[in-house]
Figure 1 (cartoon, helix red, strand yellow):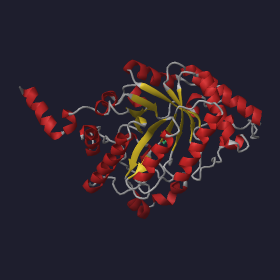
Figure 2: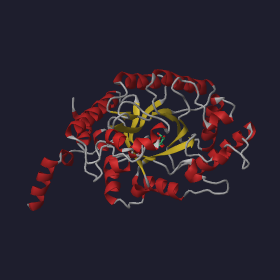
Figure 3: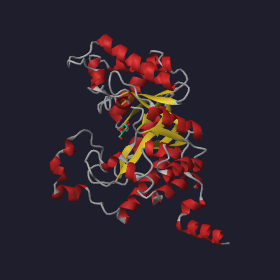
Figure 4: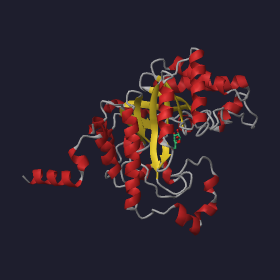
Length: 376
Ligand code: GLA
């Protein structure tokens, strides 16, 4: 009797308690994914692990499959954390992403330069990429469902970004992308192969990505999907840009995924994504800037919480309405305490971008998102 009363009380306080979980609510629409870290994979944060298993049927590795972790030095390979991630997915029947093979960040310098600092030749670069993908995609072949093969290589204007990878190939980004997808399909023929990027809602960037995908298709090189990272804010991007990006990519005949969703609520970055180190200048940590840039250290005010709820509701409604075109929606972390948004682009802030609070209780946004599929 006591137990029944407890459950009834819990249902009244916490509507999520009485309803299904995210993966159940969206079962007819798309996979629901979440980025995980070693605290979750190891079970050291048991409640977080439990919430992941209840709510999600797909996982992404936040950092453990990046080059700086797998291959930090020329003579060192380090697969322990990555193997634990893959085992966690297998033990729990979760769809698992590999993230990411070719990216300019979190990739050691020896990929691009000789020990004396001179750059590798073109042929050396081709071999470095080939052997890295052979080792990594080969290691996980049959254990990982898909790879983000190339991450973030297109610029705002739709051209290739000037990164360590494109520079190393003399600026020929098409060659970087062609080789990366060719090697990935060669060494893990059964994994799906994706391109992943941020700010892809920007029409010029979106069209640059579409051109790149058509270039691969014309060359007979397999690409199975495009990931829209979705590091967004309360006030950006405009919803019509989001829907146009989804529709443009779906028209290419590839899967479309929302891969790294979070919603920034803090000044400046809720209005647009700031890339780079400009806001890491120490003077932004001075009292007068800190008061402005980091206003919710002691908790999120109700009015901002309501805006966050509305934003998640409208975003997930857009995705649900386009569920025939969307294969997966992945949040970039479970709870606010683990989000990269507390440290980037401005260090030491208190941000609130995800669906669970730091104490692992669900936010109003969680409950709003849960209800969307049942609304007719
Ligand atoms: C990009 C990368 C992710 C992650 C985020 C920040 O979006 O794709 O792997 O590093 O930045 O956490």
